[in-house]
Length: 103
Ligand code: FES
Image (cartoon, rainbow, N blue to C red; front, side):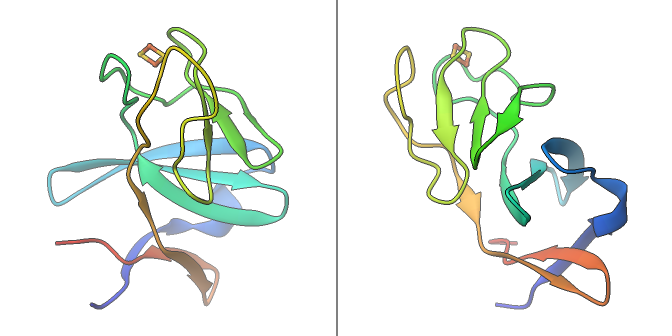
């Protein structure tokens, strides 16, 4: 599947995130620990947006009830979330963050 160009890597400071829309998908690009991750901008607990959640150490904390997710795997790391969030393979090409999206 071709990678989709989403945003300039320079637009996302370390330990920050950027919400983007693509093809009807709401995505969150996270920059943590020197790597970029692309995940669904939707918590698996109550389906609220993850944007504005704290990004630290390869994890994001949901801003609504505080569930934490591993950005590399999407796995929920603690309650109240039990299920993983969707994550997509990401890469940086020519200064742009790209993701392998299912669309
Ligand atoms: S909506 Fe994210 S932890 Fe509840």
